[in-house]
Structure formats: structure tokens, C-alpha cells
Length: 165
Image (tube, rainbow, N blue to C red):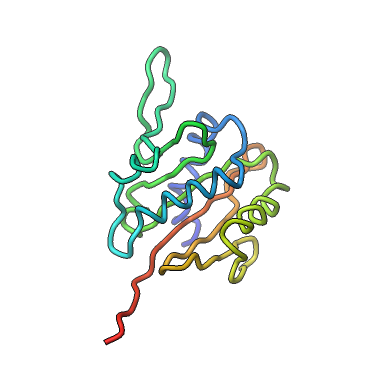
């Protein structure tokens, strides 16, 4: 079941980062993408239109003399990370970030570098790390991609806050 859930990500992982990310994203670039995801994500909705307020625009893949918009992928000038919000993410109210890595060995150090900005993970399950970002926001990071094009996949979700009555 987990494999089926990751299929859309694996397809994007194979296509988008190779074209969009020339070099690995820095921790600061990843955190910038995390902040944008936090700003547009709620337990009931993803405000795609608000991405532009944070400098993110639809990713345009060069195609000959023209550029083709890649549906569900967003880029920001000067940032090597990509924000991915496909139909599956919209349904799950999740905002996903792909950050290319130089090698699979960079996964742990990338998670550690991001932790310097967002705090330590609350727990881990194998190679997956989980954070509570406050304000009902949760984040997880998973390795994806392949040996030649490894990717750190960050997922930000908002959980419904219970009201005190």
C-alpha cells in the first residue's frame, strides 16, 4: 500500500528534479520551501494561489525554444528545492518538497541541517523522521529518488486543532 501511495512521487522524482534542480538545495532553501508550505496548508485546504505571495510559481520545464508548465510542481528563483502539490497532495491536504541530494549519504546530514532551523525530530521510523512544527503543523522526511538522483522528500500537513469549549 505504501508503494502505491508513493508512485506519483516517484514519477515526479524521476522527471522534475533532473530538469529543475541543477544542484542540491541548501538547508536554508529547504526551510524557505517549508515556510511557504506551512503558510498555504490547513487541515481543510491547500491555498495554491498563495504560493505566489511567497515567490513560488509554476515550474516551467525547458522544451526546445519554449518552456512547458509542469502541473503540480512549483519553483522559486534562487531556490533549488521544488514544491510538489499534485491531486494526491490536494486530497491529503499535504504540501511536498523535493530537495535533490549529491548522494544518498547526504540524506542524514540534510535532515540534521534542516533540524537546526525547525528543531529536532520528535521521532523516527527507519529512515523516516517526523517533526512537530507547532500550530498543528507536522512534517516528515523520507528518502526517495534513486542512487543516481537521490532526493529528500519533505511532507508538511496540518492537523485539526481541538477547540476548548
